[in-house]
Length: 192
Image (cartoon, rainbow, N blue to C red; front, side, top):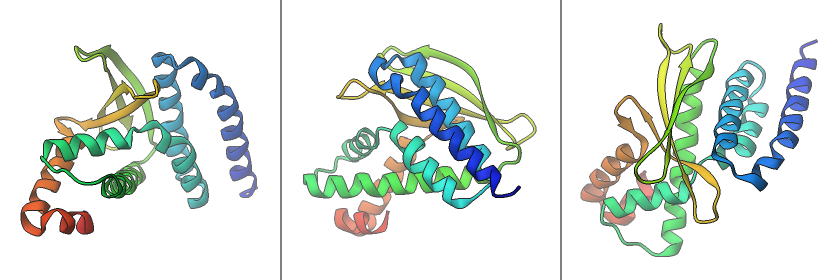
């Protein structure tokens, strides 16, 4: 019976991948937001099954939701750092690994995790701010803000995440500035 749970979860993921294949064609922000909530709930449901399924979900379902290039560019430009394309790609990959690792660590801390939609509204910059509540982290849940924007290829992706007033981009801006002051640009790339 224990082997049946991962098989059923994998089947559910495959069915959901087919169901959301039309999302790529339409790129309707409402559908992207809905699929993001479904994928986050799949991730939290999978934590009780196996690490292999967790890695699969993160690589195939969660990671594509984020615009890591935009996040890295925002952090570097705010820190007034100019680096070459190869170093910028290296920095983007470092941020991707750190963000996903921290997301997994945070999600694994809760009990009975599930994400519920609270609200969505457009911002003055043409982005969409989506508020979610993550149950299982405290008595009232954890409030999570996802900032979506349309990337250069026209796909809606998450470019910032905020817990209360703590923004992902602001956090990495501070870290990068501190590490550049201590170690220089290339020292920062080696230590972030």
